[in-house]
Structure formats: structure tokens, C-alpha cells
Image (cartoon, rainbow, N blue to C red; front, top):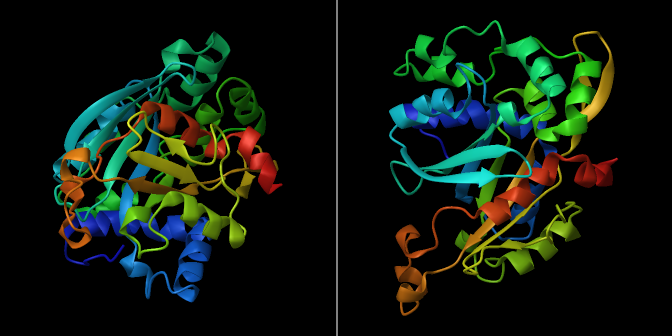
Length: 303
């Protein structure tokens, strides 16, 4: 999480992470507790496994638009994922260098939702008649960084937000938060011995008052057993809507991931293990439950 002020990708990631850190109190709460416990000496030692974004599958937006930014910054498009019940598509993107985070971008399949929900989403996005990323100078990192916080559509009314929530809490989250960073992820396997497995690290998190997403169990494990993930429950934030009404809604959260060594590299000594020796990519069953970190079934724990 140490950023180089002259590197284009670092500039963009810093533009994303700075406001995210200010808005998500669990970020600093966890890093401070890790320092106090002696797990790390400085928050810059934390390795960011991946960051995630949510988008809407409507003309001129969605993954096809969003990915242009990170492909330009050197990322490589990898596997596709489909979440039938949540009506989402997603891709992950491999970084240009191992010390950068992976990118996970999901997209709401708006065409699969009810006519009422589609009409609400269209109400806010219909005036977007061209891909907004195409108007960016992708070589201008400051401009790109500012883009993530630029309103592409008007804030919803509280009624529209609530109506979206009844069918898709994902839709409601995006219509209010837009391209705001959904979460970043601490690489647990990169921590010192004693805290570098997710079972122990989760105990540490709960000991400092972090509420974990329990959907599918507090630890979501891939079929091959080599990718383990957990996440905090999104904190509720005060939100003001277009009609001046206010209520609390789900903000962003923090994820924690442990990538185990692939079987063919089990013989390596600890100091020989590199990123390429560990389980890469994602697992749709894990991600399906991680999404629910902003859903009311989980966030009610933070009320």
C-alpha cells in the first residue's frame, strides 16, 4: 500500500484508496491494531491482494467501459464469472507486476431485472449517450483518478433507492455509490508466522471488534481448498438523497484473503515462495457470498 507519486498506476490507486480509507473506518482500525499487536511495523507493509468495483450493465457503462482504464495501465483480462441468483457478470484482471493488486470488476445484468427496476436505472443513466471513459486522457493519471469520484448520473431519490433494494441490493448500492471503491483486500498469507492463516487472523479481527460477513460461513473456501476469503460487514453511512431525505446505507468494507501454495510447489521453503507459486484468480462461490458484505442480511449486525 505504498504509492509512488510518479508512477501512473500508483497515482490512480492512491486516488482510489485515500478517500476509501477515510470513509471506511475498519481500514485504519485493522491496520492500527496490526501495528499494536506487532503483526506489522507500518501499514505500508500490508500487501493488497485485490480491489473490487461494481458497475451497471447499461449502454456506455459496465465492464466494457470500465476495463479500458486498467487495460491501459497494463492489466490483463483474465477469467469470467457469472452469478445467476444475483444477476451479475464479472471478470478479474491480472496486474502488470506482482506487487500491484488484482482487479475484480462486476456488472449488474440489468436486462435480467424486472421492468420496474430497469426503468428506475434507466431514469438515471439514460442521459449517458457516450462512453465516459472515451473522453478521458488515460495518460493523465490525475484525471483518471478523479474520474472514479465524478458523478456520472444524478443521486437517486430515497424512494427509488429503496425500490431498487427490494429486488437488487447491488443495484441500489451502485446507483448511490457509483464507481466508489467497493473493497480492498489484505493478503493474510503475506503476514508474519502466527497470523498468516485466515482462521487465526479472523480470531484477531473479531478480538478487535470487526464484524465478519457470515454468509456461507465466516471463511469462504474454494473447491480446491487453496483460496480462503473473509470480509468485514460494510459499515452503515449517513446518506442524503436527491429529495433531501436521509437514511443510513451500506458503505464499503475490507476483505481478507489467504492464497495457499499450489501442490506442485509444496516442496519450496517459505523464503522461496513467490506470488506465482500460490493459488491465483478467484472462485465464484466465494465471491457470491463476499458480495453480501453490503447486503441488509449482514449490515443489520452494524445497526
